[in-house]
Length: 227
Image: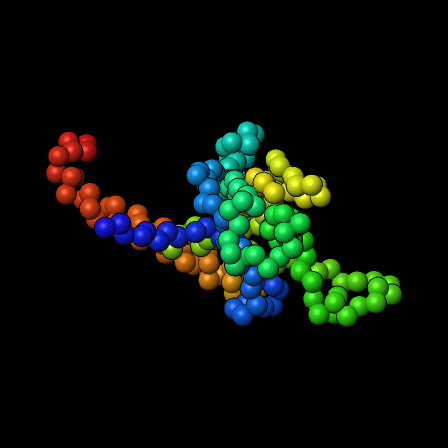
């Protein structure tokens, strides 16, 4: 007997400004990317001159930038690179209501739209005659990759390769390479969606690391003593 296996799918979840936790848009990946590239770096802060205050006997500040670096004030910067593949031939039945002539253009537009400021109700009712428009906020985007990885990101760039088109020149096959930057504490101050996602990610990372340490602690007896 064959047992059907259900698998989780990666996704983008976008919350419109001031819309958390109610107004959201979900973009499920048609195919889960086969690989994800991640980069985690420590951006080391620099000591500013004059930190010794009025202490005239303090040693002169080192001349090299490396010596002036302060790891304690550094911040973690994490980036992702994700390849998203779209193919009209494998479109889900739930999307069958869209005009077939458009191919996968609606899916591409939905992902691309995450880069742009969100439309407000005032924008929708505007006649375009306002002399000055206030700057609009972009949606809050969460990159979901399993239960332990729900991270708030800024989409830094999209590289869209349309590899096949239909007779009306709409794409029917494409691959999108999305470059993502993890948001930080400064972004979480006024955004509960970012704050909740960062807390979830931190808790998950520490929980996974704790499981590793707890299950390998018994191996400590085979290590030589540390002098």
